[in-house]
Amino acid sequence: MINAITRLTPRVIAYVTIGFAACWVICRLISDFVWHPNWGPLEVAIFVIEGVIAYGIAMVLCFQIAAEYRHSYWLRVAWLCLAVKSGVAVVRYALDDPMINLIRPGYYESPWSGLARELPMAVALSFLVAGMLAMAYGFLQMGLGFKLERRDWAAIAGVIAVLIAVIYFRQDLSAARWKSMPLVLQAQIAIQILFAVAAAISIILYRLSLQMGGGQLALAMRSLIVYIVLRSMLVFVSMILLPSLFRVDRENFVTMFVYQATPWLFTLAAVYRFQLASNATRHVAAWRVRELSAKRVGIS
Image (cartoon, rainbow, N blue to C red; front, side, top):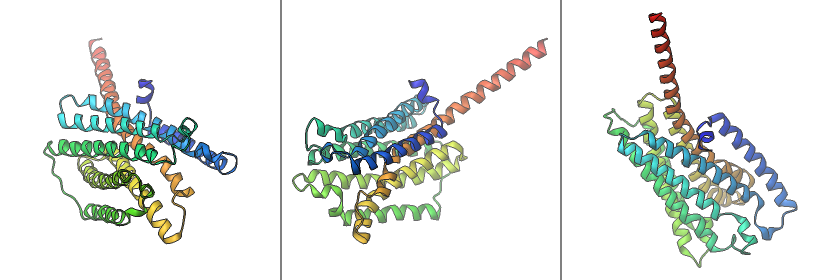
């Protein structure tokens, strides 16, 4: 199983994402016509399966990447934190399964499901931020020159602006409906703060990766940026902007369709980074074969 996961490519991840997206659309249509509402939204079951698989793959890859950094403490810590983040995300998706309604009727609509969704996510994002901070510190310890450009500062300012808007309109967040359990709303606000911190750090990491030569490391950081910013923006757009300005349901088709694909962006970042080491290993092996062949020709 681990060998199969480590052989994944960005193209395979793209095909899997498209396949799950098609399944989600079909389940959404089924939910609207023949699915019993007391069983919970059928398309959310696809979220659960998709999230568990995507973050499960990412967890394995992050542990494999961490093993490469035996002599770099902070980079090893960084990828271990990202692996733990992925593991916690797997648990979070499992607890968000609407099929639990079959065992415990009404669970998915209760504040307890909100707490089971938001609290693990806050923990997962804490590990994400810790991992990214460790990664940035590890890169800076290499003694590389580093300078943020104006567009980087503009992007960070945009992240802060979105965070301020989310906090200002916090009563429009989905967790605000559970007045009997304010901890759910507090956890959701903490999630948005953690997303903003992670987005700012990811911009710094992306700039560092470009100054280190770009390549697959830059692609990994870019995927990470898109994952973090998209998840944060989806909350702002679907829960605050669309309902306030256009009276559109927060769980509308477009935003939910985009949301179901976001876990694969994190997996894609891990795949790009893992391929960096795999390609290097293959190049070294090929070079050694050529050297050995040249020596044999010289002897003969």
